[in-house]
Amino acid sequence: MLRQECRRLGIILTAVLLTLAVSVTAFPETLYNGIERNGEWPPRVPVTRKYQPVPYLQTRPPVVLIDVGRQLFIDDFLIESTNLSRTFHRPEMHPASPVLRREGEKEAAAPFSDGIFYDPSMKLFRAWYRCDHNTCYATSKDGIHWERPSLDVVPGTNIVLSGPRDSSTIWLDLEEKDPERRHKMLFYTRYKREYSIELRASPDGIHWSEPLGMGRTYLLPHYDRSTMFFNPFRNKWVYSIRLSNVGGMAAPELEDGIGRVRFYKEVSDFAEGWKDRAELAPWVSADERDLPHPEINVLPQLYNLDAVAYESVMLGLFTMWRGPENQDVKDRPKRNEVVLGYSRDGFHWDRPDRTPFIGVSEKRGDWNWGNVQSAGGGCLIVDDKLYFYFSGLRGNPESIPGKNADQDASMGLAILRRDGFASMDGASDGKLVTRPIRFSGKYLFINADASMGSVAAEVIDTRGRVIKGFDLANSIPVNTDGTKIALHWKHGKDLAKLTGKQVSIRFHVSNARLFSFWVSAEAGGTSHGYVAAGGPAFRGPRDTE
Image (cartoon, rainbow, N blue to C red; front, side, top):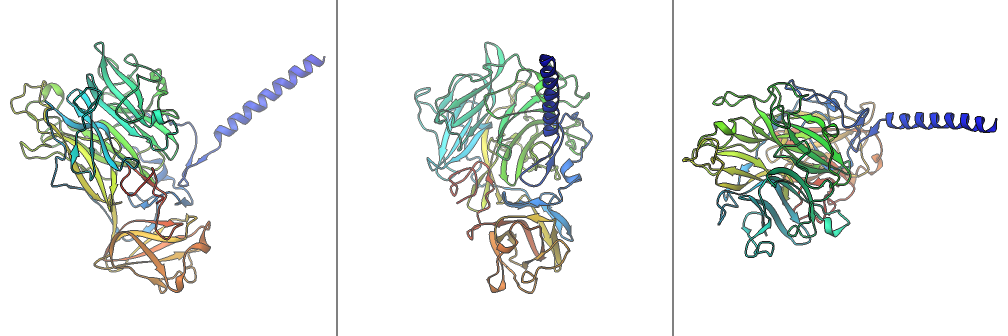
Protein backbone atom coordinates (compact mmCIF):
# COMPACT_ATOMS: atom_id res chain seq x y z
CA MET A 1 0.00 0.00 0.00
CA LEU A 2 2.74 2.38 1.04
CA ARG A 3 4.72 1.46 -2.06
CA GLN A 4 1.71 2.22 -4.29
CA GLU A 5 1.15 5.56 -2.58
CA CYS A 6 4.80 6.52 -3.03
CA ARG A 7 4.60 5.53 -6.67
CA ARG A 8 1.45 7.64 -7.12
CA LEU A 9 3.12 10.62 -5.44
CA GLY A 10 6.18 10.09 -7.62
CA ILE A 11 4.06 10.24 -10.75
CA ILE A 12 2.34 13.39 -9.52
CA LEU A 13 5.71 14.99 -8.63
CA THR A 14 7.13 14.09 -12.05
CA ALA A 15 4.07 15.60 -13.74
CA VAL A 16 4.43 18.77 -11.67
CA LEU A 17 8.13 19.06 -12.51
CA LEU A 18 7.43 18.54 -16.20
CA THR A 19 4.71 21.18 -16.04
CA LEU A 20 7.08 23.58 -14.34
CA ALA A 21 9.75 22.86 -16.95
CA VAL A 22 7.29 23.58 -19.76
CA SER A 23 6.13 26.71 -17.97
CA VAL A 24 9.68 27.96 -17.53
CA THR A 25 10.53 27.50 -21.19
CA ALA A 26 7.27 29.22 -22.10
CA PHE A 27 8.13 32.35 -20.15
CA PRO A 28 9.34 35.16 -22.43
CA GLU A 29 12.99 36.16 -22.25
CA THR A 30 13.64 39.90 -22.11
CA LEU A 31 16.75 40.80 -24.09
CA TYR A 32 19.20 43.56 -23.23
CA ASN A 33 17.20 46.13 -25.21
CA GLY A 34 13.69 45.27 -23.99
CA ILE A 35 12.75 42.89 -26.80
CA GLU A 36 10.78 39.91 -25.50
CA ARG A 37 11.58 36.61 -27.11
CA ASN A 38 8.95 33.89 -27.05
CA GLY A 39 8.70 30.34 -28.32
CA GLU A 40 11.28 28.09 -29.90
CA TRP A 41 14.80 29.42 -30.35
CA PRO A 42 16.17 29.65 -32.89
CA PRO A 43 12.84 29.91 -34.68
CA ARG A 44 12.21 27.33 -37.40
CA VAL A 45 11.03 29.52 -40.26
CA PRO A 46 11.36 28.50 -43.92
CA VAL A 47 13.90 30.45 -45.95
CA THR A 48 12.18 32.07 -48.91
CA ARG A 49 12.66 34.76 -51.52
CA LYS A 50 9.53 36.48 -50.27
CA TYR A 51 10.39 39.46 -48.07
CA GLN A 52 9.81 38.69 -44.39
CA PRO A 53 9.06 41.59 -41.98
CA VAL A 54 11.27 41.73 -38.90
CA PRO A 55 9.23 40.64 -35.83
CA TYR A 56 10.69 43.11 -33.32
CA LEU A 57 9.95 46.01 -35.67
CA GLN A 58 6.36 44.84 -36.09
CA THR A 59 5.79 44.47 -32.34
CA ARG A 60 8.17 46.79 -30.55
CA PRO A 61 8.68 46.55 -26.77
CA PRO A 62 6.70 49.04 -24.67
CA VAL A 63 9.96 50.35 -23.19
CA VAL A 64 13.39 50.28 -24.85
CA LEU A 65 16.30 49.66 -22.49
CA ILE A 66 19.31 51.72 -23.57
CA ASP A 67 22.05 50.92 -21.05
CA VAL A 68 24.06 48.94 -23.62
CA GLY A 69 25.74 50.99 -26.31
CA ARG A 70 25.10 53.92 -28.54
CA GLN A 71 21.57 53.91 -29.94
CA LEU A 72 21.66 53.95 -33.74
CA PHE A 73 18.93 55.24 -36.06
CA ILE A 74 19.29 52.42 -38.58
CA ASP A 75 15.55 51.62 -38.25
CA ASP A 76 12.42 52.88 -36.44
CA PHE A 77 12.94 50.75 -33.34
CA LEU A 78 13.76 53.82 -31.21
CA ILE A 79 11.48 56.36 -32.89
CA GLU A 80 7.95 57.24 -31.74
CA SER A 81 7.45 60.14 -34.14
CA THR A 82 9.56 62.40 -36.35
CA ASN A 83 9.52 64.74 -39.31
CA LEU A 84 13.21 64.04 -40.01
CA SER A 85 14.35 62.04 -43.01
CA ARG A 86 16.73 59.09 -42.83
CA THR A 87 19.85 59.00 -45.00
CA PHE A 88 22.04 55.90 -45.35
CA HIS A 89 25.76 56.53 -45.78
CA ARG A 90 28.58 54.60 -47.38
CA PRO A 91 32.28 54.55 -46.59
CA GLU A 92 34.99 56.17 -48.64
CA MET A 93 37.85 54.16 -50.04
CA HIS A 94 41.12 54.95 -48.30
CA PRO A 95 43.51 56.39 -50.92
CA ALA A 96 46.20 53.84 -49.98
CA SER A 97 43.95 50.93 -51.03
CA PRO A 98 44.83 48.21 -51.54
CA VAL A 99 46.67 48.39 -48.22
CA LEU A 100 47.84 44.78 -48.54
CA ARG A 101 48.76 43.32 -51.90
CA ARG A 102 50.68 40.33 -53.20
CA GLU A 103 54.37 40.18 -52.28
CA GLY A 104 55.53 36.76 -53.30
CA GLU A 105 52.05 35.25 -53.21
CA LYS A 106 50.99 33.92 -56.61
CA GLU A 107 47.25 34.60 -56.53
CA ALA A 108 45.93 36.11 -53.29
CA ALA A 109 46.85 38.29 -50.33
CA ALA A 110 43.43 39.14 -48.95
CA PRO A 111 40.94 38.10 -46.27
CA PHE A 112 38.32 35.55 -47.25
CA SER A 113 36.54 36.42 -43.98
CA ASP A 114 39.59 35.32 -41.90
CA GLY A 115 39.98 38.04 -39.25
CA ILE A 116 41.28 41.56 -38.63
CA PHE A 117 41.38 42.77 -35.02
CA TYR A 118 43.16 45.26 -32.81
CA ASP A 119 45.09 43.54 -30.02
CA PRO A 120 45.42 45.86 -26.98
CA SER A 121 48.05 43.63 -25.35
CA MET A 122 50.34 44.01 -28.38
CA LYS A 123 49.16 47.51 -29.39
CA LEU A 124 48.92 46.25 -32.96
CA PHE A 125 46.40 45.76 -35.73
CA ARG A 126 46.52 42.06 -36.60
CA ALA A 127 45.33 40.47 -39.83
CA TRP A 128 44.91 36.85 -40.84
CA TYR A 129 44.33 36.42 -44.54
CA ARG A 130 44.34 33.98 -47.45
CA CYS A 131 47.72 33.76 -49.11
CA ASP A 132 47.11 31.54 -52.10
CA HIS A 133 46.01 28.24 -50.50
CA ASN A 134 47.47 28.95 -47.04
CA THR A 135 46.61 31.22 -44.10
CA CYS A 136 49.05 34.06 -43.44
CA TYR A 137 49.50 36.74 -40.80
CA ALA A 138 50.39 40.44 -40.90
CA THR A 139 50.59 43.29 -38.38
CA SER A 140 50.29 47.06 -38.49
CA LYS A 141 50.79 49.95 -36.11
CA ASP A 142 48.28 52.23 -37.82
CA GLY A 143 45.98 49.90 -39.77
CA ILE A 144 47.27 51.22 -43.08
CA HIS A 145 50.88 50.10 -43.41
CA TRP A 146 51.24 46.33 -42.95
CA GLU A 147 54.24 44.10 -42.28
CA ARG A 148 54.67 40.36 -42.80
CA PRO A 149 56.64 38.89 -39.87
CA SER A 150 58.96 35.93 -40.43
CA LEU A 151 57.53 33.02 -38.43
CA ASP A 152 58.61 29.51 -37.49
CA VAL A 153 55.53 27.58 -38.68
CA VAL A 154 56.88 27.49 -42.21
CA PRO A 155 60.34 28.98 -41.58
CA GLY A 156 61.06 32.18 -43.42
CA THR A 157 57.40 32.91 -44.21
CA ASN A 158 54.38 34.48 -42.51
CA ILE A 159 52.27 31.32 -42.96
CA VAL A 160 50.42 30.22 -39.81
CA LEU A 161 48.49 27.30 -41.30
CA SER A 162 49.32 25.35 -44.43
CA GLY A 163 47.10 23.35 -46.68
CA PRO A 164 44.38 23.75 -49.28
CA ARG A 165 41.72 26.10 -47.96
CA ASP A 166 38.65 28.07 -48.85
CA SER A 167 37.26 30.59 -46.39
CA SER A 168 38.19 30.81 -42.72
CA THR A 169 37.20 32.81 -39.65
CA ILE A 170 39.73 33.74 -36.97
CA TRP A 171 38.44 35.49 -33.84
CA LEU A 172 40.49 37.27 -31.18
CA ASP A 173 38.58 36.52 -27.97
CA LEU A 174 39.66 39.08 -25.37
CA GLU A 175 37.44 37.56 -22.66
CA GLU A 176 38.63 33.95 -23.00
CA LYS A 177 39.96 32.73 -19.64
CA ASP A 178 41.97 29.85 -21.11
CA PRO A 179 45.10 31.39 -22.70
CA GLU A 180 45.40 28.41 -25.05
CA ARG A 181 42.08 29.37 -26.67
CA ARG A 182 42.50 33.14 -26.92
CA HIS A 183 42.32 32.82 -30.71
CA LYS A 184 39.60 30.73 -32.32
CA MET A 185 39.29 29.46 -35.87
CA LEU A 186 36.68 27.93 -38.14
CA PHE A 187 38.62 26.59 -41.11
CA TYR A 188 37.23 25.21 -44.37
CA THR A 189 39.89 23.00 -45.89
CA ARG A 190 40.52 19.97 -48.02
CA TYR A 191 41.76 16.84 -46.27
CA LYS A 192 42.50 13.63 -48.17
CA ARG A 193 40.51 14.86 -51.17
CA GLU A 194 37.47 15.66 -49.02
CA TYR A 195 36.46 19.16 -47.93
CA SER A 196 36.01 19.60 -44.20
CA ILE A 197 35.25 22.19 -41.54
CA GLU A 198 37.69 22.27 -38.64
CA LEU A 199 37.57 24.17 -35.37
CA ARG A 200 40.96 25.08 -33.90
CA ALA A 201 42.41 27.24 -31.12
CA SER A 202 45.67 29.08 -30.51
CA PRO A 203 47.36 31.00 -27.70
CA ASP A 204 49.07 33.47 -30.06
CA GLY A 205 47.23 33.27 -33.39
CA ILE A 206 50.30 31.70 -34.95
CA HIS A 207 50.59 28.17 -33.56
CA TRP A 208 47.28 26.36 -33.96
CA SER A 209 45.93 23.25 -32.29
CA GLU A 210 44.79 20.10 -34.04
CA PRO A 211 41.05 20.08 -34.89
CA LEU A 212 38.89 20.32 -31.76
CA GLY A 213 35.48 18.99 -30.83
CA MET A 214 33.89 17.54 -33.90
CA GLY A 215 37.28 17.00 -35.59
CA ARG A 216 37.45 17.00 -39.37
CA THR A 217 33.82 17.19 -40.40
CA TYR A 218 33.82 16.45 -44.11
CA LEU A 219 30.76 14.20 -43.74
CA LEU A 220 28.58 16.85 -42.10
CA PRO A 221 26.27 19.19 -44.05
CA HIS A 222 28.12 22.33 -45.12
CA TYR A 223 29.54 24.09 -48.14
CA ASP A 224 32.51 26.36 -48.65
CA ARG A 225 32.27 29.96 -47.42
CA SER A 226 30.89 28.80 -44.06
CA THR A 227 32.01 31.12 -41.26
CA MET A 228 31.37 31.97 -37.60
CA PHE A 229 31.07 34.96 -35.24
CA PHE A 230 30.43 35.75 -31.58
CA ASN A 231 27.19 37.29 -30.26
CA PRO A 232 28.13 38.83 -26.88
CA PHE A 233 24.59 40.03 -26.19
CA ARG A 234 23.67 36.39 -25.56
CA ASN A 235 27.17 34.98 -25.03
CA LYS A 236 26.82 32.59 -27.97
CA TRP A 237 29.06 31.51 -30.82
CA VAL A 238 27.17 31.33 -34.09
CA TYR A 239 28.07 29.17 -37.06
CA SER A 240 26.99 30.82 -40.32
CA ILE A 241 26.69 27.70 -42.47
CA ARG A 242 26.30 27.89 -46.21
CA LEU A 243 23.91 25.38 -47.76
CA SER A 244 22.15 25.29 -51.11
CA ASN A 245 19.34 23.53 -52.95
CA VAL A 246 21.81 22.13 -55.48
CA GLY A 247 24.86 19.89 -55.23
CA GLY A 248 25.82 16.80 -53.27
CA MET A 249 24.69 18.20 -49.90
CA ALA A 250 21.53 19.88 -51.15
CA ALA A 251 18.95 20.95 -48.57
CA PRO A 252 15.64 19.61 -49.92
CA GLU A 253 13.55 21.96 -47.77
CA LEU A 254 14.73 24.99 -49.77
CA GLU A 255 12.54 26.38 -52.52
CA ASP A 256 13.60 25.93 -56.13
CA GLY A 257 16.04 28.47 -57.51
CA ILE A 258 16.96 30.06 -54.19
CA GLY A 259 20.58 28.87 -54.50
CA ARG A 260 23.03 29.78 -51.73
CA VAL A 261 21.49 30.39 -48.28
CA ARG A 262 22.57 30.48 -44.64
CA PHE A 263 21.74 28.02 -41.88
CA TYR A 264 22.20 28.86 -38.19
CA LYS A 265 23.67 27.03 -35.22
CA GLU A 266 24.50 28.65 -31.88
CA VAL A 267 26.69 27.14 -29.15
CA SER A 268 28.15 28.23 -25.83
CA ASP A 269 31.53 26.61 -26.54
CA PHE A 270 32.85 27.53 -29.97
CA ALA A 271 34.33 24.02 -30.44
CA GLU A 272 31.03 22.22 -29.87
CA GLY A 273 30.16 21.93 -33.56
CA TRP A 274 27.15 20.04 -34.89
CA LYS A 275 26.35 16.47 -35.87
CA ASP A 276 23.59 16.58 -38.47
CA ARG A 277 21.35 18.91 -40.44
CA ALA A 278 18.56 18.71 -37.86
CA GLU A 279 20.68 20.92 -35.59
CA LEU A 280 20.94 23.65 -38.24
CA ALA A 281 18.06 26.12 -38.45
CA PRO A 282 17.20 27.69 -41.82
CA TRP A 283 18.19 31.31 -41.39
CA VAL A 284 18.47 33.88 -44.16
CA SER A 285 18.82 34.26 -47.93
CA ALA A 286 18.55 36.84 -50.66
CA ASP A 287 14.96 37.94 -51.16
CA GLU A 288 12.76 39.79 -53.63
CA ARG A 289 14.18 43.17 -52.59
CA ASP A 290 17.65 42.14 -53.76
CA LEU A 291 17.68 43.20 -57.38
CA PRO A 292 19.73 41.60 -60.18
CA HIS A 293 22.57 43.48 -61.78
CA PRO A 294 21.28 44.96 -65.06
CA GLU A 295 24.13 43.36 -67.05
CA ILE A 296 23.68 39.86 -65.56
CA ASN A 297 20.21 38.39 -65.71
CA VAL A 298 20.37 36.17 -62.60
CA LEU A 299 18.65 36.45 -59.24
CA PRO A 300 21.05 37.43 -56.42
CA GLN A 301 22.07 34.88 -53.81
CA LEU A 302 23.57 35.18 -50.33
CA TYR A 303 27.22 34.19 -50.71
CA ASN A 304 28.30 34.83 -47.12
CA LEU A 305 27.22 36.45 -43.86
CA ASP A 306 29.81 37.76 -41.39
CA ALA A 307 28.58 39.56 -38.28
CA VAL A 308 29.87 41.40 -35.23
CA ALA A 309 28.46 43.27 -32.23
CA TYR A 310 28.73 47.02 -32.73
CA GLU A 311 27.48 49.22 -29.89
CA SER A 312 23.82 48.14 -29.34
CA VAL A 313 23.22 46.02 -32.46
CA MET A 314 24.59 43.09 -34.40
CA LEU A 315 26.09 44.39 -37.62
CA GLY A 316 25.76 41.97 -40.54
CA LEU A 317 27.99 42.07 -43.60
CA PHE A 318 26.01 40.31 -46.30
CA THR A 319 28.12 39.32 -49.30
CA MET A 320 25.57 39.32 -52.13
CA TRP A 321 26.32 37.30 -55.25
CA ARG A 322 24.98 38.79 -58.47
CA GLY A 323 26.52 36.26 -60.87
CA PRO A 324 27.90 34.75 -62.90
CA GLU A 325 28.37 31.12 -61.84
CA ASN A 326 31.90 29.70 -61.85
CA GLN A 327 31.47 27.88 -65.13
CA ASP A 328 30.36 31.12 -66.79
CA VAL A 329 33.13 33.34 -65.39
CA LYS A 330 35.40 34.73 -68.10
CA ASP A 331 37.96 37.44 -67.41
CA ARG A 332 35.94 39.15 -64.68
CA PRO A 333 35.57 37.46 -61.27
CA LYS A 334 32.17 36.93 -59.70
CA ARG A 335 30.27 40.12 -58.91
CA ASN A 336 30.11 39.83 -55.11
CA GLU A 337 29.42 42.99 -53.11
CA VAL A 338 28.90 43.73 -49.40
CA VAL A 339 25.47 44.95 -48.24
CA LEU A 340 24.72 45.80 -44.60
CA GLY A 341 22.10 44.33 -42.30
CA TYR A 342 21.24 44.96 -38.66
CA SER A 343 19.82 42.73 -35.93
CA ARG A 344 18.55 43.57 -32.47
CA ASP A 345 17.75 39.99 -31.43
CA GLY A 346 20.69 38.16 -33.03
CA PHE A 347 18.65 36.15 -35.55
CA HIS A 348 16.30 38.35 -37.58
CA TRP A 349 17.93 40.83 -39.93
CA ASP A 350 16.68 44.18 -41.17
CA ARG A 351 18.27 45.31 -44.44
CA PRO A 352 16.65 48.65 -45.19
CA ASP A 353 19.27 49.70 -47.75
CA ARG A 354 19.99 47.08 -50.44
CA THR A 355 22.55 49.11 -52.37
CA PRO A 356 26.18 47.97 -51.97
CA PHE A 357 27.92 49.29 -48.86
CA ILE A 358 31.23 48.19 -50.39
CA GLY A 359 30.91 47.41 -54.07
CA VAL A 360 33.05 46.33 -56.97
CA SER A 361 34.71 48.83 -59.26
CA GLU A 362 33.22 49.19 -62.72
CA LYS A 363 36.60 50.07 -64.20
CA ARG A 364 38.32 47.19 -65.94
CA GLY A 365 41.76 46.52 -64.48
CA ASP A 366 41.04 48.00 -61.04
CA TRP A 367 42.24 45.90 -58.11
CA ASN A 368 38.63 45.49 -56.89
CA TRP A 369 37.01 44.78 -60.25
CA GLY A 370 35.29 41.70 -58.81
CA ASN A 371 34.59 39.42 -55.84
CA VAL A 372 34.44 41.91 -52.97
CA GLN A 373 34.27 40.02 -49.65
CA SER A 374 34.06 41.13 -46.00
CA ALA A 375 36.60 40.42 -43.27
CA GLY A 376 35.96 38.57 -40.02
CA GLY A 377 35.57 41.02 -37.14
CA GLY A 378 33.58 43.40 -39.34
CA CYS A 379 35.15 46.75 -38.52
CA LEU A 380 37.49 48.52 -36.12
CA ILE A 381 37.14 51.86 -34.34
CA VAL A 382 40.02 54.25 -34.94
CA ASP A 383 39.52 57.69 -33.38
CA ASP A 384 36.14 58.83 -34.72
CA LYS A 385 36.20 56.52 -37.76
CA LEU A 386 35.25 52.95 -38.57
CA TYR A 387 37.76 50.90 -40.55
CA PHE A 388 36.25 48.25 -42.84
CA TYR A 389 38.72 45.86 -44.45
CA PHE A 390 37.66 43.83 -47.46
CA SER A 391 39.04 41.86 -50.35
CA GLY A 392 38.82 42.50 -54.06
CA LEU A 393 40.08 40.78 -57.20
CA ARG A 394 41.61 42.30 -60.29
CA GLY A 395 40.98 39.16 -62.32
CA ASN A 396 42.97 37.82 -65.24
CA PRO A 397 42.12 38.92 -68.79
CA GLU A 398 43.77 35.75 -70.12
CA SER A 399 41.84 33.37 -67.85
CA ILE A 400 40.12 30.22 -69.01
CA PRO A 401 36.36 30.45 -68.31
CA GLY A 402 35.57 28.87 -64.96
CA LYS A 403 39.21 28.14 -64.15
CA ASN A 404 41.41 31.01 -63.08
CA ALA A 405 39.60 34.35 -63.20
CA ASP A 406 39.79 34.61 -59.38
CA GLN A 407 43.36 35.88 -59.38
CA ASP A 408 45.26 38.83 -57.94
CA ALA A 409 43.34 39.35 -54.69
CA SER A 410 44.25 42.29 -52.45
CA MET A 411 42.95 43.88 -49.25
CA GLY A 412 41.30 47.29 -49.28
CA LEU A 413 40.27 49.70 -46.56
CA ALA A 414 37.04 51.72 -46.49
CA ILE A 415 36.43 54.49 -43.92
CA LEU A 416 33.09 55.48 -42.37
CA ARG A 417 32.22 57.98 -39.68
CA ARG A 418 31.73 56.30 -36.30
CA ASP A 419 28.02 55.35 -35.99
CA GLY A 420 27.73 56.71 -39.51
CA PHE A 421 25.51 54.02 -41.04
CA ALA A 422 22.41 56.22 -41.06
CA SER A 423 21.50 59.75 -39.99
CA MET A 424 18.22 61.48 -39.21
CA ASP A 425 18.35 64.79 -41.05
CA GLY A 426 16.34 67.88 -40.15
CA ALA A 427 15.66 71.25 -41.74
CA SER A 428 14.72 74.39 -39.79
CA ASP A 429 12.10 72.80 -37.51
CA GLY A 430 13.06 69.13 -37.25
CA LYS A 431 11.88 67.00 -34.35
CA LEU A 432 12.38 63.40 -33.28
CA VAL A 433 10.64 61.85 -30.27
CA THR A 434 12.02 58.57 -28.99
CA ARG A 435 9.88 55.71 -27.85
CA PRO A 436 9.68 55.28 -24.05
CA ILE A 437 13.19 54.48 -22.82
CA ARG A 438 14.84 53.52 -19.54
CA PHE A 439 18.46 54.05 -18.51
CA SER A 440 20.75 54.03 -15.49
CA GLY A 441 23.18 56.79 -16.54
CA LYS A 442 22.90 60.54 -16.17
CA TYR A 443 24.79 62.23 -19.03
CA LEU A 444 23.19 62.57 -22.47
CA PHE A 445 25.47 62.30 -25.49
CA ILE A 446 24.87 62.52 -29.23
CA ASN A 447 26.78 61.87 -32.43
CA ALA A 448 25.75 64.69 -34.74
CA ASP A 449 26.81 67.10 -37.42
CA ALA A 450 25.31 70.40 -36.31
CA SER A 451 28.04 72.58 -37.78
CA MET A 452 25.49 74.39 -39.99
CA GLY A 453 22.66 74.39 -37.47
CA SER A 454 21.88 73.08 -33.99
CA VAL A 455 20.64 70.18 -31.90
CA ALA A 456 18.86 70.52 -28.55
CA ALA A 457 16.78 68.16 -26.42
CA GLU A 458 14.00 68.02 -23.86
CA VAL A 459 12.76 65.14 -21.71
CA ILE A 460 9.13 64.03 -21.60
CA ASP A 461 7.28 61.96 -18.99
CA THR A 462 4.82 59.12 -19.61
CA ARG A 463 1.94 61.58 -20.05
CA GLY A 464 3.72 63.53 -22.75
CA ARG A 465 4.55 66.47 -20.47
CA VAL A 466 7.98 68.11 -20.52
CA ILE A 467 9.78 67.49 -17.24
CA LYS A 468 10.58 70.72 -15.40
CA GLY A 469 14.15 71.85 -15.95
CA PHE A 470 14.53 69.62 -19.00
CA ASP A 471 12.52 71.79 -21.36
CA LEU A 472 13.69 73.38 -24.58
CA ALA A 473 14.19 76.77 -22.93
CA ASN A 474 16.75 75.26 -20.56
CA SER A 475 18.46 73.05 -23.15
CA ILE A 476 21.81 74.39 -24.31
CA PRO A 477 21.94 73.80 -28.10
CA VAL A 478 25.08 72.46 -29.73
CA ASN A 479 26.31 73.64 -33.11
CA THR A 480 29.38 71.52 -33.71
CA ASP A 481 30.25 68.35 -35.64
CA GLY A 482 31.39 65.48 -33.44
CA THR A 483 30.96 61.80 -32.72
CA LYS A 484 30.69 62.32 -28.93
CA ILE A 485 28.95 65.56 -27.96
CA ALA A 486 27.50 66.14 -24.50
CA LEU A 487 24.07 67.78 -24.33
CA HIS A 488 23.47 69.95 -21.26
CA TRP A 489 20.68 71.86 -19.60
CA LYS A 490 21.06 75.12 -17.71
CA HIS A 491 21.70 75.21 -13.96
CA GLY A 492 23.95 72.15 -14.22
CA LYS A 493 21.08 69.70 -14.43
CA ASP A 494 21.79 66.11 -15.42
CA LEU A 495 19.56 63.06 -15.81
CA ALA A 496 20.43 61.46 -12.46
CA LYS A 497 16.97 61.93 -10.98
CA LEU A 498 15.42 60.21 -14.01
CA THR A 499 17.52 57.06 -13.65
CA GLY A 500 15.34 53.96 -13.88
CA LYS A 501 12.26 55.95 -14.86
CA GLN A 502 10.34 55.68 -18.11
CA VAL A 503 10.81 58.80 -20.21
CA SER A 504 11.15 59.92 -23.82
CA ILE A 505 13.57 62.39 -25.38
CA ARG A 506 12.45 64.96 -27.92
CA PHE A 507 15.36 66.07 -30.10
CA HIS A 508 15.13 69.40 -31.91
CA VAL A 509 17.27 69.15 -35.03
CA SER A 510 17.73 72.28 -37.11
CA ASN A 511 19.78 72.03 -40.31
CA ALA A 512 21.71 69.16 -38.77
CA ARG A 513 22.21 65.40 -38.85
CA LEU A 514 21.72 63.11 -35.86
CA PHE A 515 23.51 59.73 -36.02
CA SER A 516 23.06 58.31 -32.52
CA PHE A 517 22.45 59.08 -28.87
CA TRP A 518 23.14 57.41 -25.53
CA VAL A 519 23.03 58.08 -21.79
CA SER A 520 26.30 57.45 -20.00
CA ALA A 521 27.07 56.91 -16.35
CA GLU A 522 30.38 58.73 -16.85
CA ALA A 523 30.99 62.34 -17.79
CA GLY A 524 33.51 61.08 -20.36
CA GLY A 525 30.73 59.48 -22.38
CA THR A 526 31.55 55.77 -22.33
CA SER A 527 28.66 53.85 -23.89
CA HIS A 528 29.34 50.34 -22.53
CA GLY A 529 28.50 49.12 -26.01
CA TYR A 530 30.49 46.65 -28.06
CA VAL A 531 33.36 47.87 -30.19
CA ALA A 532 33.36 45.26 -32.98
CA ALA A 533 36.98 44.21 -33.66
CA GLY A 534 38.34 46.82 -31.25
CA GLY A 535 40.65 49.74 -31.74
CA PRO A 536 43.54 51.63 -30.12
CA ALA A 537 41.27 53.33 -27.55
CA PHE A 538 39.91 50.10 -26.06
CA ARG A 539 41.37 47.44 -23.77
CA GLY A 540 38.47 45.02 -24.11
CA PRO A 541 35.41 44.24 -26.21
CA ARG A 542 33.34 47.13 -24.79
CA ASP A 543 33.55 50.92 -24.61
CA THR A 544 34.39 51.28 -20.93
CA GLU A 545 37.51 53.48 -21.01
